[in-house]
Structure formats: structure tokens, C-alpha cells
Length: 153
Image (tube, rainbow, N blue to C red; front, side):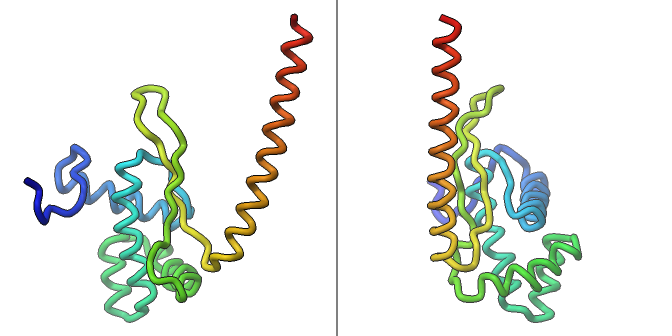
């Protein structure tokens, strides 16, 4: 039984797992989106929420704790100066995991983990508009494919 055993092992040694999480957290906070496997994305969510929580705390001790994990001063500066004010009204849930499908080589489930915007209402309206655009463009592509198929026949 795995009672009180938090976190995923990801088939790695503890030192490799820590290095992997440090790298993924740094990449996600720098680029605000990362494409990875589902289990890694779900585990990464825990670490990123902690780092943004430290940024919201804003003290020197919190900054040093973040530097102890992230090890990139520019990324820590971004967390404390831009990301923490963006999420000041939000009580957790700073990331979103979007399922992408399956990787071609080993059929591993892929996901994209990204930071959500600070304003929830603004983001949902923008994403709804993007979905409509995607639907239109997909339907145009389908129409073009269908036309191409009839031309070949």
C-alpha cells in the first residue's frame, strides 16, 4: 500500500526525478507552456503551483527558496515580478493541462501544460473566440480536402 506516499516516481531515481522537475518547472515558467507526457504534466503542476506561491509571498526568504529550486535568476525574477502579480487574486490552480493525443513512437499520452491568465473571465471569452475560429478553419480545410478528393476521382 502506498499510504502517505505523495508524488509520482516516473520510473526514475530520486536525483533524476528532482533534476527533471527542476528543468520542466524552469521551462514552463520561462515559456509559459510545455509539451510533455501526461504523468509528467500532472506532477509538474504541483511544483509550479509551489513556485508561484513563493512568488506571491514575495519575501526574501521565499525568493531564496525559489532560487534553491529553479537556479535561474531571470526565471525567478519573472516569477516574482510578473507572474505573482498576475495571480494575486487566484488561490491556486495556476496551470491548465490540455490533452494532445498520443506520441507516434511509443504511444505515450501527450499533454500541454500551460499557465492560465490572471483574469478568468477575460481568458474564457478569448478561448471561446479561438475555438470558433478553429472550427471555421477546420471546416474550410475539410471542404478543401473533400474538393481535392472529388477532383482526383
